[in-house]
Image (cartoon, rainbow, N blue to C red):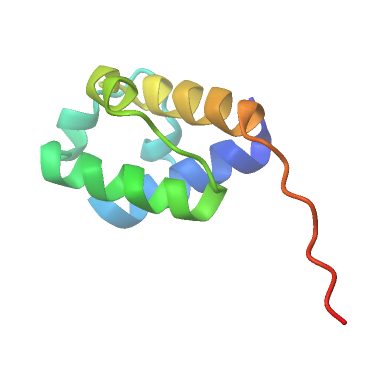
Amino acid sequence: MSTDTEAVAAEVLAQITRQSREVCTRREVLLSDLGVDSLALLEMVETLQDRLAIIVPDEVTARIQTVADLQDSVSRLAAAAPVSEPTIRT
């Protein structure tokens, strides 16, 4: 997994749950144990989509239950995302 992607996922999770980043990097932790309900999960996914320029399909979001699920899903989607060409300004 990309360290950058992992760091962004941990940062967003910590921000939304108000838990420490250390807790938010433990792959075995259930998101529900961190207080993540369906609304918080959607907020987290939306933030990650914006920050990482990815699209997280609803069926992927529905399968996210642990920190590992979140990290792995975001990492796979970020790796598969097309790299946009820089815009040349004149």
